[in-house]
Image (tube, rainbow, N blue to C red; front, side, top):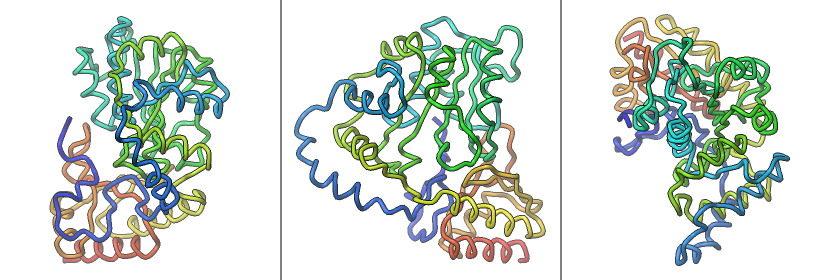
Length: 332
């Protein structure tokens, strides 16, 4: 695991606006918090060794067999389980489409897999984040299906699927394909990164291999209870994702209008920016010190440079504050 992931707010004394995580920080999670207050007694007992009740509920919602769903301690555990399962199935040569989340490569190396810079004739498995972190680009379901047909396995991290208008591959399609491992994140969808809750959807063959790698009790009792509440109530962090995405596009246009910054086109709520002067680290420290704003220095993503940073849209007022502050830094 690298240091320097987003949301390192714990390293600062007085951050008031947090753009560094790809999560909307103004989500009203009060109903979920109130539910969990009534569930606190569950910490006195062990949770289910595997979250089978929650897996069954997810499966019913997605219209697939419960055996094809594996609930995990966030999407990150799902990533590491996927790599271990591939090793055990003899799928040793992996290509990761870059730039993207560093944990895919770390998980592969931790499992003793070969990570290739380019896909070639020996490649067994390709990893894709869709929508992609940090670029915000998304590939539609037909595009990912075409990619899956070229390799023995395709691992798709759809953690940000709720925050795009691009048509994502469904759980049913992933299971039917037979060689797709699809990763989902309630952490992102419901703005609960501290709780850690995700799940994998895949065919029975891959699901069996993953279950052999699971550590018992990896998902705690409160997370399981939260998952049931989320599904029973249709709980989401953003009630109107279309409006939120429109605000993200407005933020991108505002940043792109600043001379000295270019912003990639994005299909989701976050975006990758590049400075023509200075470094992302310098900008990050200045924003934190002078404006109590936190951004994500993206220089530690493979293939990116010290000039790259990432931000996720927040409220209109906060987005305007960021645009104003960065314009001030550029002009100084």
